[in-house]
Structure formats: structure tokens, C-alpha cells
Length: 79
Image 1 (cartoon, one colour):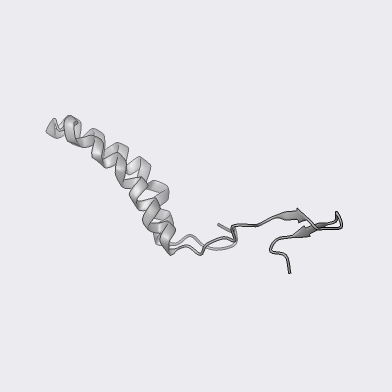
Image 2 (cartoon, helix red, strand yellow):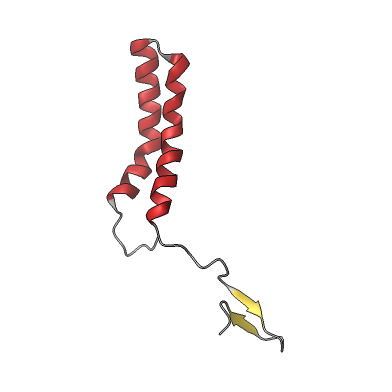
């Protein structure tokens, strides 16, 4: 993510999802004695990250620099 772009709502939610999962885990465990099932909330940040990644534009799989046939550096993709 570039620093000059504002964060989207999904990115903000993803940033706090780990902390929310921990708080939810302790609330379910201490208040409702649901320790056996409360661990499931730790799957939510991973699922959320996967969901957000579908909306982000894909990077070029070959980014960076390579060596041309004559030995000079050349940026990918070769043109």
C-alpha cells in the first residue's frame, strides 16, 4: 500500500481484526465459559485478509530488475 493513499474501510478493519479477535476470545471464554469454541474467532482475521486480497489489484509477478542478453540491467517486464 502506498503511503499517500488513504486506508479503505476494509483495510482499517483488517488492521484491528487481530485485537478484536483476542478481546472476543477472552469475553467468550470468561463470560460464557466457551473456551472450547472461542478459538474459532482467531480464524476471522485470516479469512478477512483473504477476502480483502481479492479486491486489491494484482502486482506484476515479475517486478524488479533482470539482466539483459548483453549483461545490462533492465526492468521487468521486458519491452
